Image 1: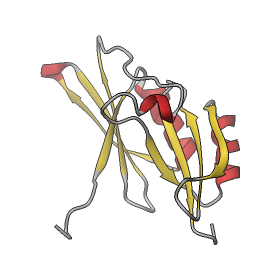
Image 2: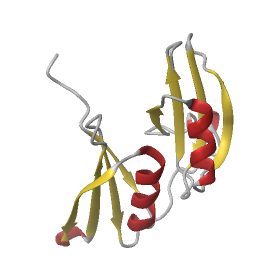
Image 3: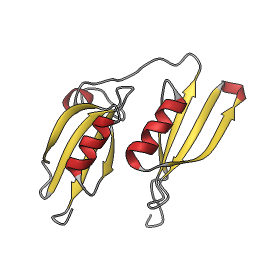
Length: 140
């Protein structure tokens, strides 16, 4: 299984353009491609991080409704399924301040993580999805 890696995570959103712009500004993604799946009325914007190669797939389907919008990580863990997406960042405090300035709601301010040697914070993106920010290692 050493040749297996996570390619992307999919996130269903209310407004593709607004969500794509926010994730690009907040985390350095660029639009890789836009797709339309007519049989199921689904629009897709695939974002890619040019330096790391990871992808975030944003999806919108007419008639979709908000799902889990937990207020914090503890509440998210009460529902089975994906509860948040996490980004490893070089400067946790600066990234937290920047994404809040871009419209994220602060959930947990930067602090030590339960994982030794790691700092963490949580925000909610402009649609209310939980986003974890992690800073791993003493040099970061």
